Every structure is written in structure tokens, then in C-alpha cells.
Image (cartoon, rainbow, N blue to C red; front, top):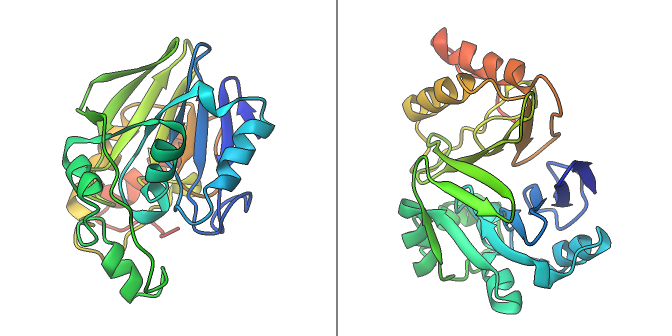
Length: 246
């Protein structure tokens, strides 16, 4: 599904567009011309559906060179191994989260906690996946002729990053993972690395970016005035309140 120039939605589960497995986050394809990249990899239960969606958008899997993860919770990263093993896609994650993904750490990725809470089946395994690129704050990430900037954005999870794409006047886009959503909503969960103080600091940072377009990890995307939605979440934290949960 083409969302805007060079941005496609190729995966989305029960908290989004229901176009792939229910456990998938929103998975975006960026068309960099000479090569493509995914933002996040989905939940790994039926990743073939994401691959089929990529092909239905007119791309071959040979064009998909990279997958950059916002964080390594299961619904965003458990599909990484499939794309790496099946198609040779190079995986990128933050320096902190890369260690947990490479080890298939079921505790640090909060997978064991999610299984205890009934989010995943008890027998589900988070496959370890090699990480080719360990991402740092402010680092440029190039996909063909597209350049993203890495933004550390913890709060929802440790090792969470967002990706800023500046494509000219009034074309500042944010791939925000699970930091902020349409309507100024957030996702605060009872897991080891979800911290409200870090979340508030991240929303203050993202608010200052004044982004035009928001491509979140779940739910609807925004193609204009995205900063007003981020402002709502930031405003709640500024008043010592907690924004509404997605």
C-alpha cells in the first residue's frame, strides 16, 4: 500500500490495518531508488505475507537490502531472522538492542514477559539474528538516495530508536516505532524497560522536531500536521500527567 512518495505500508496487524499477521507491527518499505529498506520486521509468525505485500507493491525482495529496527520487542523484531536468513537482508538496530537480538535474549526483549501475559503462545521462540549495523544517536542511515537520522528514543523500551527523514520543505517525516501515535497516544506497558521519565524526555525531544508526517509502529499514519499530535503527548507529560495509552 503506497502511503506517500517512496513510503509503502507492507505489514500491519490487529492494532493497525490488518494486512498481515495479527501480531505484526506496522512495517514500512522505503524506496531509495537503487535499493530499499524495511522499517521494522513484524512479529515473525507469518512473515511470508509481508514479503508478498512487498512484491505486490512492485518490488522484488532482491531490492530490499536492509531492515532497520526501532526496537526489539517481538512484534517489531521477531521477523528479522526470516528476512536475513531467507533474503540476505542486513539488519540494523541500536547498539544496546543489537546485543539482545543477536543472542535471542528472551528476557531483555521482554518476550518471556509477553508470553506470561498471554500476548504470545508459550511455545513461541524469538530467533536470534545477526546484526550487521549497530546504530548510534545522530548517525546518518543511507538507503539509496534517502538519508535517515537515528534518534535515541527510550521510554517505551530500552534501545528504542526513531528515524527522521528530511526530504525538503514541509517534508519532515518520523518513523517513530512505539514512541508516539496518532492522537498523542503512547504505549506504556508493565515490562522491565518501560520508564515514564525516559518516555517524557523522548517526547520532549520529538516535539522539538516539528515533524510533518508520522509513521508510527501501530495504528494510523499521519501525512500532515503530525507535530500537533506529538504536542498532545508532550503536553500531558509537561503537566505531570500520562498520555492516553494506545
